[in-house]
Amino acid sequence: MVIHAVVNRVLGLLVAGTVAAGSLQAQDRDSTCHPVLVKRPNLASEPVAGACRQLAQSLLEPEIEALWKPAGRVVVQTAPRDVQSTSGGNAAPAGSPAQAAAVPSIQPTAFASANIAAIAQDSGSNAIAAIAINPATLFSSVTDPKELARLSRLVDLTFFFPVDGADANDDGRLDYAGARLRLNLTAGSQANPLNARGDELMRSLTEEANDQTVRLEHLLNTTPTFEACVEALTASPVSTAKVEEACGGSLTLTPGAAYEQLHRLMGEARERADAQYLGLDLRVDTGDPTFGAVENAAGTSIVAGLGYGKRLAPSLTATSGGVRGRLGVRYVSLRDTTLTDWQVDGGLALEFSRVMETQRLEFSAGFEFRYSGKEDAREILRTRYVEFRTGLVVPLAGSTGLSVAFSTPLVGEISPTLSLNMNWQQLLAASR
Image 1: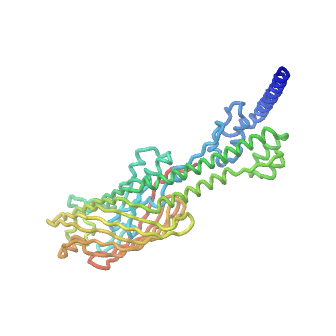
Image 2 (image 1 turned 90 degrees about the horizontal axis):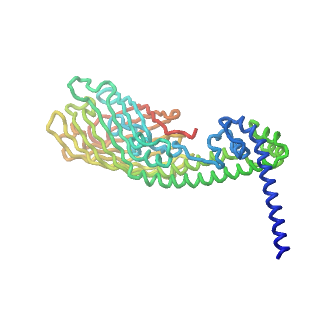
Image 3 (image 1 turned 45 degrees about the vertical axis):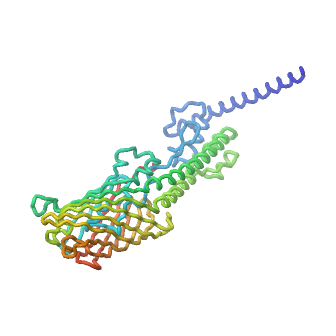
């Protein structure tokens, strides 16, 4: 028993001595790492303790240096723009002559957007401006991607009005103006899988980045040629072969590639989440929607309906096709007559689109109709018609785009229209 106790005591002293020596060696190498660390941007006040860990974090990839936090671990987060839908964005004056899509989507703008349209129809040429805001994101944080995934898809308000004056005929009343509310009932079901996928990817990336930090820290602590190793690691560009030769060990420097993969996989998840929607489309307009083409057509109308859309085979890299539909009830009260009317209002269209960075190149074609029982007043009420509509939306750069739309009646007496729209949207914050 005495011999056993003595042996254990000796082994304990040996182990303690080894640990102490390792600790002293790590502290000594931290002193070597610290002068290099303080030369790195924004890290000059870091203490000596843990300097090699912090140096490893800052050396891994200059382009994502902001992601590496000097707290002993890597913190990675998706950016708000990663969860912003590419399907919404435009301030769409649906139901007006400036409508830019065959059947308008009810997917809201993420933050704010604007549109100005030049229109040609039977009554001549006009211009309409539209401004849309998303109150859910306007009055909440715009930096939390998980919350924005739902709020940016939930609701928006669009206001549209003529550019050439609110009362061009000087009758003391608005010539034409309108408002539209889009409420996406599937915002939650779109956001939940997107957020779950984001959490999964961030955990995977964080684990990979931490593993690489540990491996690089070990290399800095053990390399016999510290100065040459640091020189190879700080070279631009970094050569893996030169790092292995200078440091005497192997290391795979790929956090940037992993981060780009995160963005790509998040984009794919976003496209799948936004491939289907169902929501409410509520509109109110006042004035003359024909801009003088029909006498006494001015009035107030209220439309309440459902909008549905489904995109097949959603993809980041390929063109996808889909279908859009809407169906609603419209109430009209004409201004200078006693006429009122209840109407059925709807449409069905095919769409083809492709993701172009933060927006979509989109073509749509289909039919819209309006019907009521008052056949003798169909022209002034703008009802009992079917029209063919087509529209093309082309992204230009960043957050701007151009759209061209055309409509022509197939049944009924309404004016054909041609519009050219300039679109702009406020994108959510990017990663850096």
